[in-house]
Length: 559
Image: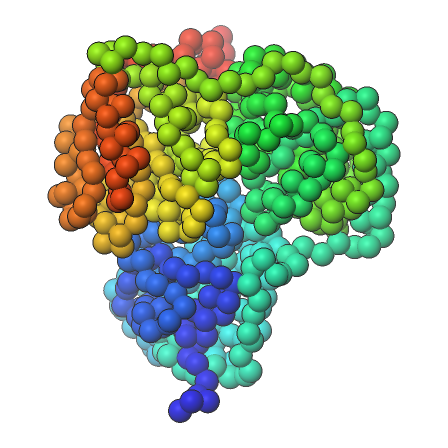
């Protein structure tokens, strides 16, 4: 019947598709069959069947970084728990990933039957609190609550910019909804956080007073601005005020690094250019837009030194300077209010400018980090997204000066190795502006390389660089050299795409600068995906001094 109401599963998929989501990442499973079928039947979303649930969660994370929101679908117990590490990473990154989980039917549950994907104890809710711990909101859907509950779940996930957990027993998922379906808005049209008018007025007056009193100001915009869809508001603020800005490594690329007001990377003592940390910390006022995460790797082992009394934070729903805090204040409203009421601000005096990495290298030289990253920097084009695996790749990529309008994605805070390969797939499927360029080390890649076959299945065209040094290089940097547990199984990486059925991929293994230049030129010209294995000396990975390691871990026994 044309006017028949959708089933619960069909309604959930359709309501989430209203946000602008066009792909669902996951692994089919029997208790989730109603969802699986609803996704398959939808003309609005495409099933992306991943190699495993963890990869699917990473891919949903990547997709949400570009689209602003994503869907992950798994089955009960074994599926959802396999995905939980990836969902937790999305929470750390503040990404709205809607995790939908099919559960055993209420008939099975009410009878206490022993069924698969359980612990055999007749208890059917013990996994929910585990999956829910990775999320900001949960819902147990039924035909009569699905309409109202989906509005609550969507509102909370978008308000907090964090994952949501949705579960439905199999029999209820097949039943028609009870109530009137809601036709939702696209993500860009939704007001995600609303301000209390009095608090907003007071916060604006306070911030403007502090800003106008400062003789030099620097801004630190964060990725949360992008997560809330506020890049244009940020650019308008920067344009109106002329304020100088830097980013931390975690927030690199939130604004084009070709922007004339961009200063570089602020990361404590390893800021780039050198001396930027002194300039930032010496400013009269540091405007933290979104909430900088003062994490160990983001601040070079907590070496940042910005006084709380001059750090004015515009958070997602608060404003804070020292012990003064305003709540119920949306970041969007603060940015727009400041842009409307401020004029040109005094710039931070800092004369050292960033420059591209040097390309100088002899053609016969072995490939190394010293001659690789400059070549990646040169090959990037406007609209590209550069995806960087955690570890050594991040260390070498952070100092790069990205060309105009090139995005940068990594996972500094959660730091789960293996994230980047599936995340690059999700990013590639979401990015309509340019290419997706991935760099990963072999240790990380071995965790999730089976997603290469999924990339081939769905015909996406990333450019992938895999660094082969035969070991977990960053583990040696952070500990000591020599333990055999840092050694890897030896793979023939350049053969992986063909072995996984990836048609028309360009693959190569290179060990000299000349071979690398040729491979990059081939990848640039190739109308398809590219996969380049780059040989890197294991000797590049050397342990940090023991004093630095102790600063990181603070684990030495006290005498």
